Image (cartoon, rainbow, N blue to C red; front, side):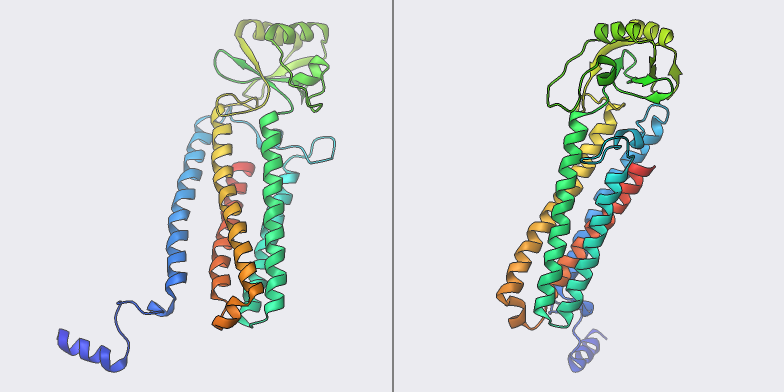
Length: 305
């Protein structure tokens, strides 16, 4: 039976899985790209699942993304998640330009491939620059927090509106100065400014008198900014996940931009014209769409939930 099957395969010139340029009518390059994307999907899924477990393990003390990501470059005031939404829009639009580049590659229209690939690279570069700004703002901080002995961070408020340590202390948090405040200084300023109070980690507001008593009993240090150890916004795990997940995704975007630049150079040199196809553009397009799709999930799980 095996010999008959082999003879039939040879006769039909349709060999079983033994190599060739297009196993299952897909080139090895595309197939390997899909394998890579599947494994990377599992990796990102594990990261987001881990974030979800931590997020819902500490629901009462987890930072609210609308309080954390509320600033926009060159604009004053609070703009919750507006800048992150703009970043997401830019990355999605870069996926659209990538689709157009692949489409014109199928049509062998070199000039239009160059145009849309270039716009994709610009979109990716803008996203990376925006991500760098967001990281810088997150690390520097803008409101400050007060760590307590229970490791729950509380924040300065004015009535039932979130304020900042800088406002209480009469300092400018954006003047480039490295500030340092002690718990005693904060308590003294609260005594001198009765309009200020604190918001606890569970988002309950205390009166000025209760806030002073609470800080005297529980406060341990004033936190300004965020890193892998301390986080002015709340639970330290929030900062850990932010740096790791957005950093890992940012590395993918950076790698994609570098690869796109290499592909663009090859397109300009006419490499794919001589090959008679733009399959390499299509394979990189698969990777770029994956990076964009992952960010949609990161945006949903990390910023919106």
